[in-house]
Image (cartoon, rainbow, N blue to C red; front, side, top):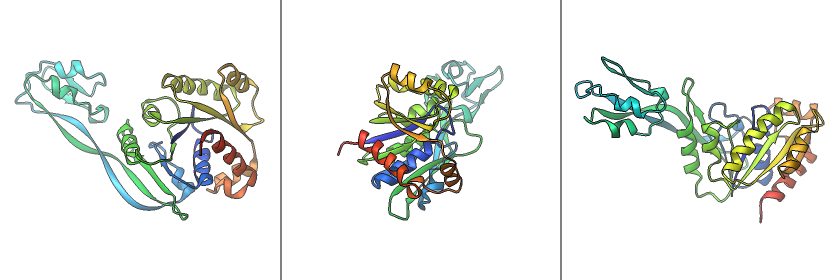
Length: 276
């Protein structure tokens, strides 16, 4: 079973949920695919045993063979390759490595080279749980290749917890593709509900079953409860706002270790979504 934990925006407790659900279950593997800002490993503290460099292709144009016909630029929807009157400009950071420009080139003037965009780290926690996370290099615009590598690594695993990127960008779509269940971490505030609605629409488009965990319950208003009722969304749990939780989180501790009631919350969530 693959369980994605995501949120409409950052800072809603997504990583807290992912890591504490994983540690409470004490089975499976956790992958942190929030590659622009991975931080699950800061709490789980795995001993890193392996590091893999992730590379992505980009087009290289043979100026002698190029006729400046413009077919490559017409094809590329990401503006990664741009024919001018005198030469073809290539922007490797914008390239999605689809290979289309190479296919449409009538003179075979384009080939692909590889460049490093990030790394994947994997290791074991002190209790032997498997953890892996990706880290996108600064300046790179897309971590989808890294996310795909992490997903392929765990494709045959029976239980995978996925700490997903926030929002609904391409990286989030790549993270939730094919998952069995999605947990949305949301705050009961107008901004929290607004961002959450976008996530619900995205997941609905993929027909992914989902439930909501309301973090910092007790703050904000009733809008999130009304929205969940209107959309028939299951509220899996409510985690109250707590200065003690915040202090523990800020010191890099696991809430399920320090607070028995928090561990009970995680167990209840797992009971609702995982069939033995």
